[in-house]
Amino acid sequence: MGAFDHIKTILGIILGLSITHLLKGIIKFVQHPKLTKPYWVHLIWCVYVLLLIMHFWWWESHLRLITHWNFELYFFLFFYISVYYFVCSLLLPDHLEEYKSYFTYYYSRRKWIFGALGLTYMLDFIDTLVKGKAYYLTHYDWEYPARNISHIILCICLMYSTNRKFHAVLAVAFFVYELTYIYRLFLYY
Image 1 (cartoon, rainbow, N blue to C red):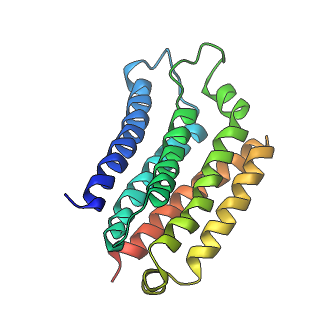
Image 2: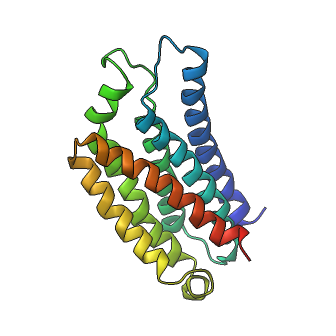
């Protein structure tokens, strides 16, 4: 077993837990419709983060290009994917008793949710650089840094805004954009 095979095991475990947490939380809305009524904006963010993690996991296959692994790189990747789990746990808490609804929960935890989500975009820059300049030049153009920078700025705005329309528009915009981004990166030839 090579270093990458060894490291991708822990990546798979933590990302698998992230996906499990999201799916388990989302299915509660179906299992207990009277107990846990979803707030549609919050639900879109949950599905968006699920899509983002799927995209991330697929893209991390490029880590196989790294020939020299060290603990610092391993630690960085462990931290990076742990932030995804943190976002998932923030989006769908184990218990909602302290809050009246997901609507109340979402707006009360928005600074944490969007602070952590914004951090994933910052860490993505480092993750891309780790794979090397040649990797960046063959896979990305101007859109990648523009995407990440704009997403970081918008996450900061979401942290401080309580405007429901703003949150709703950005939830839909982030989701639709990610779908088109994935389509253009992987499916469109």
